[in-house]
Image 1 (cartoon, rainbow, N blue to C red):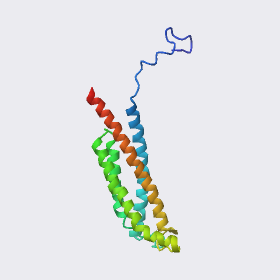
Image 2 (image 1 turned 90 degrees about the vertical axis):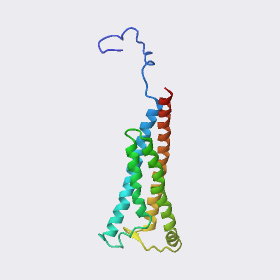
Image 3 (image 1 turned 30 degrees about the vertical axis):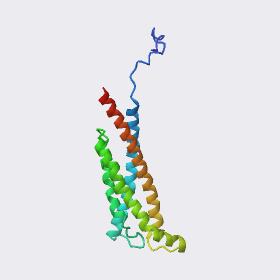
Image 4 (image 1 turned 60 degrees about the horizontal axis):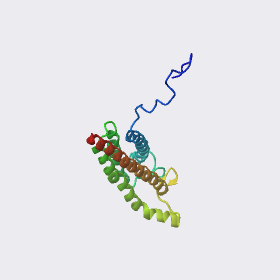
Length: 183
């Protein structure tokens, strides 16, 4: 090692780094995937809060129906999509495989499912809007169909990436578990 005051210690030519311990690849991958999934969960939380705010404002009649439209039917079951995200967060501290699997399955059921139903529910109104230019529901002056389809596109991407990264994280954890069993 070099010092400020003098020459390098004898016998250390810089090639003595190979004996040092390194972090295994699946641990690095696990940490980075957890970080990515947390970012996606926070993005999902923002989407969830926007939908919940729209529902609260419209049901409590805080503003007129002309400003914020009544929610569509798919928005009610979508509110349950917060539960899978919580299971995902609870699985991280101790690498709990069961919670992560529950999170993945219920994300498909409570997040992707209502979004697919919402696409089908709003399709006739979207056709009417784009063929005839008539919209009957508005959110702050914009067509509610356009706004909600935009929200749905973002939500599908967030949930799709969340499931993808969760699957990769699950594979990483299984690799870790299999290596422990071999020893």
